[in-house]
Amino acid sequence: MTAAELQQAAKALAAMFSCFPQSALADAEMQLRGYLAAVQEAELADVQAAIQRFIRGEAKVDNAQFCPSSAQLSIEVRERRLMRELMAKRGAQSPVKLVKG
Figure 1 (cartoon, one colour):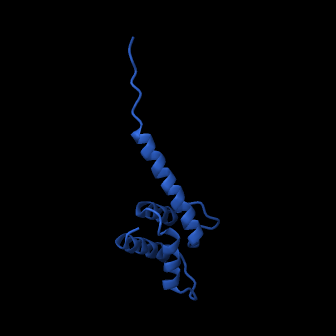
Figure 2: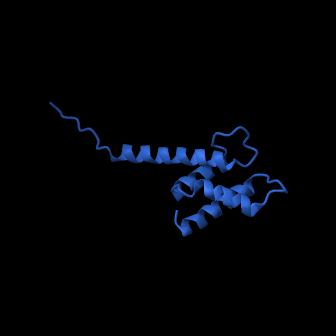
């Protein structure tokens, strides 16, 4: 991700953090850095889609009452990438033309 994309990802993460209870002992800056490190190689669109799925309760987690770990976020980001790639591949395939005989 570019620096600008990392900033956008940080904003999306901050939104996710505000939707889940946080420990009073958590260092917010270090937490944000850890999550960004986990997703920095991903596409911003996949990160944003994964975060939205956690916020909406659509992602696979053991307990949807708590913020996902950076590992859980990374897994969901990879799943979003896979789905995006599959949809792009499906869209790139030319439709089959039926020949009337």
